[in-house]
Length: 272
Image (cartoon, rainbow, N blue to C red; front, side, top):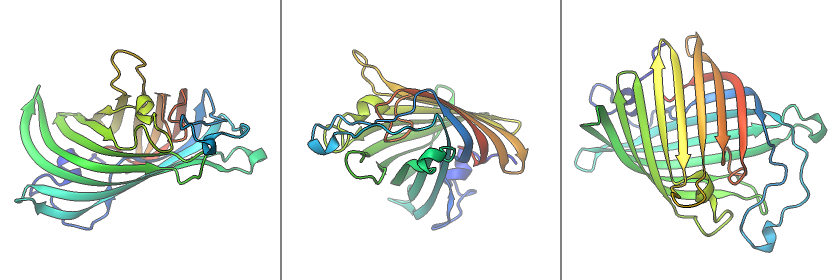
């Protein structure tokens, strides 16, 4: 099936409007039946110097696990602010399951919860040959629901823009981390970044995506992450899925942990 474009996904003109309180896809929905990591994070730590954040002895995690993501959004206000804005609420959940680790009774190593509120403005202007389709601002919360010393969280205000050109789609985001320098992980933005770029190419049913995050430290300690994915059509919405990542922050518990991962599985929903 042909993927939806940005206008259809975000209902950016009158031909695509579907109304409020309809559950629709947001980020990709997939399951990696096998995800290999070069460096399991067996003793996570935070630079919060409180006594509660002293980590106990490491856990013997496997290099191989299952990873899956669910993500949905719904529009709650349409054409408000003088008829020019839509308000969305969204939820994404990412899970890391040590299903092949019999010795540890197959635990969920990490679950990340990400609710957000998104204010979106449809626009139409050209930028370096691309058509800018939307701009907006969002409040984004991420947490893993754990107690100290493994509690991790991030609150941020995100500015975003979406652009298109033929088979290419680009999302640009930059944010201010309100939990930087305090809380569970005061240095999180120095590792996972303060901005990212998502470039998507769709052709003949294939969808290629690259997401790069950067901490914007140009003079010292540049860090970030990169993730590449490829979905290949099998039947209707079912696709084979490959995901490769390198850097920090694949999950919140891994925010300051450097690793390379490779995973294969299936997907139902893409960025488009």
